[in-house]
Length: 248
Length: 288
Image 1: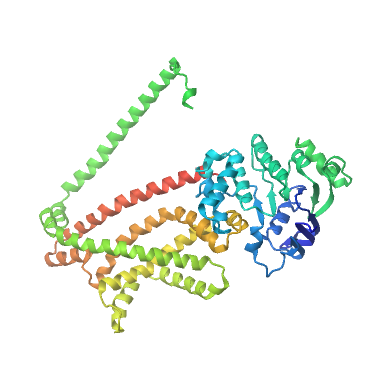
Image 2: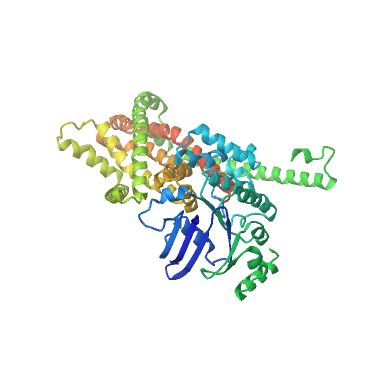
């Protein structure tokens, strides 16, 4: 079986600053890969490169065996297969919750309005947001906004869901309601790559944990291996600091 | 919140004292404001009415009888200004939107149009409106081109539209550029094309943001339509001018000015309110 995502030896720099170097990663279907590491270690850049929001300087990225790092590829076609959720939600403030979710299914997938609406309402109902369908995003709490943003991505049935520190902008009390959606999606079999600082959550959902440092994966393995029995001294150091900050 | 207010609550004696103190302070402030206003405005009025030249001024600028006589012709002229403003305003909106989109596009096929749009905006934003009116109003008929109207109202409108499209295009473009790149990233990552992103995500937010400055330009447009009078269009300004030059009494100008103010002052008040609401809404918008 081919992996959903296959990254081989990619490299990315912004001007003179090297952000990703010689990084490789494979993501099998129905698995969750968790990226951990300090700010600036390259987690967000990696996700943005996968989504083609940034172009890479070298290496290759394959989605379902197709090379998406080919400059001739139709980026819109690729992005239809990828969902992305951002740290700052990025909901469209001029559209209601329902319109936020149905915009892409209608305009990108060509679904008719009724079909898209009933699918969106079903998702909203499943994640306890049915009563918010006609509200504008600025009336919602941060946790609710982020849940809507996740639903907006999931409504397109992506092959791969990319989650970029989706709880970092949230009040600790609101973190759990967002993470529980991700847990549900994981048990649905959604394939995902996520960057997070929530180590407890990483332990629960991760099939593989990758520790990034200076743009490369220094250590990878099961959550048990990487988070609880780290071998690399830099991983140990990082986890010690996380532990001191009370996040493990 | 309301259910948490205890209905049995009554203010403490300290709170009652505070309220009385606040009332005393505000009463004193109101008195000071009234006295100072009466003094300043009263003095100005007395100076004006007792000054030796007041009678002449009154006769030359504020001749009520004459003003009433010329009112119908000035109003008829103002009707032309209003028509010009609304028809011109519509054309300006359409052209300016096109220019703004061309200037912000990255599509390689549209590159020459992007350059042309930039040049257009540079030229028409930088040249005085009155020059453009003279060029179009007198220059175009001199070409004796077939099929081009030499109607001065039409040519005046064209000149105003040419110039204002450049102004308004820049306002719309600034609105487009003010939308945070994360909105574009979110839309593109949902698979929307760049055109769809502009149409459904960026532009609706951008236009909403620039409504107040656009209203400002609309007020300016109404005033600047008075400039087409130099082509001989009998608008409010020209109607006033004709009457004034016949009698050497300048009351018709004052009548025209008052008529313009009757329209523009409510419009600017409305604009100010729109700007205030916009600012309030933005502060409540939070992270976008």
